[in-house]
Image (tube, rainbow, N blue to C red):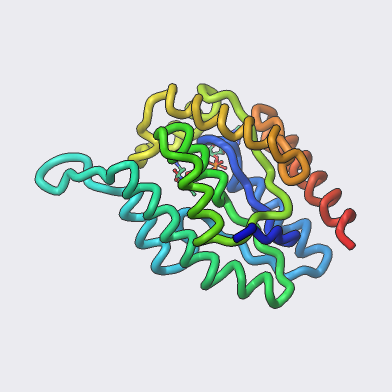
Length: 217
Ligand code: Z5A
């Protein structure tokens, strides 16, 4: 089964503290000014059931009798379970009625985190992508920031969740995997220098979205 490219599905990827939340708001405004319906979502999560799965993934108890971190396979399958729900409940219906969808993270995150950083099998992830997700974004903006810079920003916000608590080496693997994916799919990915101030990051991202829109038939 091949993946269906969806021009109006735009995804934001990157490491911690890259500025995805801020950029997402700027992209949304850009599309709305042009009169488009925009559905914004995030992963893992984005529907009531998928948000429950997010909670299982990110907020597992870290001590006491309830301490049971998910295995790497469990983590991967829960990511895809949440994604399957989001695609069917939210993303496909929105695309089918002509809306744009902006997702804070999508399948590329599973390749970077569960694949490259956790050591999961990329072939299995690709099978899940084709069998369970079935679609791929028309535009993916990779907000790239050096790991120490991003972690400092993210950790400045307070307590880290289970994945945010990983070591710097883990996030270096995530960053390298994202950059490798971007290099491998230059038509879909645009890499944004997210080490700049947030206004400059948003400006770059918006310019890429406008170019993508202008190139559509
Ligand atoms: N995950 C996975 O493992 N596999 C998957 O398939 C998927 C996800 C889909 C989601 O948690 C976690 O799930 C994530 C990957 C994993 N794990 N981690 N770690 P999340 O949604 O809570 O985490 P996140 O996506 O990494 O969110 P984030 O750290 O909040 O990143 P962000 O949205 O890009 O950052 P932000 O909220 O816009 O900014 C963070 C702070 O930095 C904030 O105080 C900003 O004001 C500041 N900031 C941002 N940009 C700048 C610039 N340019 N200058 C100065 N300050 C800035």
